[in-house]
Structure formats: structure tokens, C-alpha cells
Image 1 (cartoon, rainbow, N blue to C red):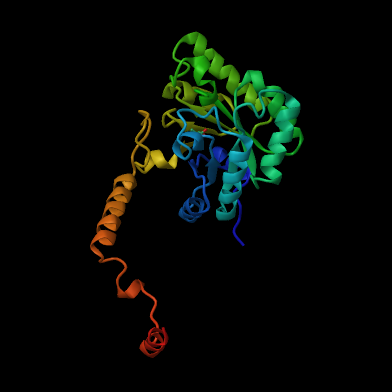
Image 2: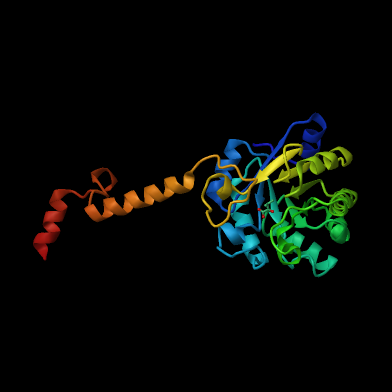
Length: 280
Ligand code: KIV
């Protein structure tokens, strides 16, 4: 039986300075590949609203969307911890809603942990979910569900005042009992400083190399999502253009009749087909 990555593994990795690896996935096959590749955690991110469902931001993602994709990922993740995002308005409305919806993501969505956006303002919500024995990953800095309040996807913590806000958010998330926190689009030196003053691991995305781990949206790192590529994305492979080439080749072969070939075709005994055609 495979050993699941637990919150204790996250803690240990920070203590011994071993980097945590996390990638998003939204379906069984991708989760299985990531799991086999050895990622520590798979994030069923609400980024699925953009990269899977084609919305311009994450605000329209529903609990039903998250449950559907979380279940699929959980079937493919034998070792990796499955962290599922709480979608917009599934926790902001009340502490009660936060606990009920976090519970649904675990019971129905088979998540090992949930992630929610916000620091000081949502510390009470995090505490209540943790008190219900559900591990919580925080998410601070640039929090995409606040895109309209921020006036766009912008780097956070650049001014002294804003940097202090990010620091207070990190401390609040830790004090509320989160086991880790995602820090998004924050200057590297600030992240490094925060990583030194909090005891929970910081998983960065656009937050430099001084974090305790990294997370990326897999379509971004594989060149599969061309609508918008943030500065922090490294393309590890051009799978998107490879897919397009394969689709074109398939169309050509179907049109010319070279696919399906004999090896892709089921056969019937000549005698049987002769009998059938002669009977008619
Ligand atoms: O939804 C998501 O994929 C995320 C990552 C960007 C961290 O929250």
C-alpha cells in the first residue's frame, strides 16, 4: 500500500529544509501521472474555472464543480495529498458555511485537506474548519477570488504597508491552525522573510525561491493554456503544441483513410461474412 503524504510530512520537510512539490490536477489521468511522478500534493485548484471550464476568472466556480473534479483526482492520487480549493462564496458567507462546505469536500470530494483564500479576515473560518478535524492550507498574497477588489491579478506586498499586511496574514493563518500556506505573487525577499518567521511551510507561486515548496497550474507548465501566461510560469514542456500537432495528424489520417489501419481493426472470418452477404 502506498504511503499518503500527510500534514506531518509537510512539517518535517520544512524542518529538514526539503522542498515540497505541488501541482494542480483536475482529472483522474493527470492525477495518476503526477502521483507516479512523485509530487507531494495535488491541488484541485479553482483555477479549473479558467484552464478547464474557460471562464475569465475563478469566481463562477461552484461547489458542485469542485466536488466533481476532486473525486476524480482522489481516485488517481494514491500517495499525493489531495488539497481541494473552497470556491468563491463557499466560505466567505459564514463560519458555518465554511465548515459545512469543507466537510463536503472531504466526505463527497474525497479531499485530504482544503484550501481557502484570505488571512486575518478568515482566521476564524480556518480555526473552525481545523476544529472539525479538517486540515486547512491557507492562501495569501494575490488571492484570485479577490481579483475585482484588487483591480486585477497584481503583485502584492510591494509597499511597506502592503508588505506588513501580507506578514500579518501569514501569522494569522498559522495561528488559526493551518498546516501550510500558499503565497501567490509576492516579492521573493518578502516571502523569504516570512518563511523565516512562521513555522508552517510556505508553498510559493510567483513568490521566488525562498519558499518551502512550489506549486504551478499544470496547463501553464506544459504550455497547454495560452489565454494568459503569468511572469512566474516556466514552461517545462510544449505539450500544448504537441497535442495540436497530433490532432492535426489525426484529422489528416482520417481524411486520407490511412487511419484506422489493419492493426487497429477487428476481423471477422471470411466465411462468416460471405454467408451473411449471400443470405441477403
Ligand atoms: O486554484 C489554483 O490553482 C491555485 C493555485 C494558483 C495556487 O490556487
